Amino acid sequence: MNPVINVTNLDYAYGKISVLKNISFQIERGDFFIIIGPNGSGKTTLLRLLAGIFSAGNGTIQILGDSIDNYNRKALARKIAYVPQTVPVDFPFTVSEVVLMGRSPHLGMLGLEKEKDLVTAKQAMKFTELDHLADRRTNQLSGGECQRVFIARAICQETEIILLDEPTASLDLAHQTRIMDLMEKLQKEKDITVVMVSHDVNLAAMYGKTLLLLKEGQIVGRGKSDEVLTFQTLEAAYGCTLLVDESPLGHFPRVTPVPGRLMVVKE
Image (cartoon, rainbow, N blue to C red; front, side, top):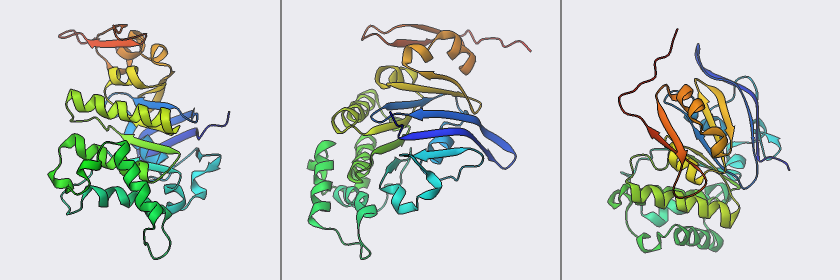
């Protein structure tokens, strides 16, 4: 099976500071692929490289069988939608106007929407349960509602791949679950490949088909949740003592930090 994303021997640095080191992995079509790891491990940098926001240094990134360098910005936006962690919402646009912006890679030179674009935007709002908020301005929404607006905009792009940078950050438990349920529904019903960065290893265990664990810019684990989320691997990656057992909700790991018992790393 041909992967939709193929990363080979990827290095990246900010000046002289190395951020990613010899990263290689593949993402299959229809995967729910979640990138996890401690702060500073290179998760967001990797996602931005996949989105074409940063240009790769050494190594290669292939999107749908073609080098990412062969796509111009508009062509890449027809293949990949990117939802950043924070998006400014203090502009005077309505929900429907923001969602419709997802059609821009498909518009002609005049940038005029056609009936198909309007229908696609309405379908995206319905899928994300935002249709009742279509005329509301984004600066009048809650954090969870705003996050769904930008996911709806990504859906409206009609891409094969959606990249999300910590979409549940700063949300309460109910909104976290709602966002993750929405992404799982998107992956299963529309066969879209979802690639997500998350700090929450328990959400990653519950929802991810494939996990990628980074530490200091290197891959230290890749596979199913029970293969990656072992206490030996996690303690080494995060530098603290953890309890890993089976979740009462299903056959996937549950990770619990052990308070007051930081692991001592010997020199």
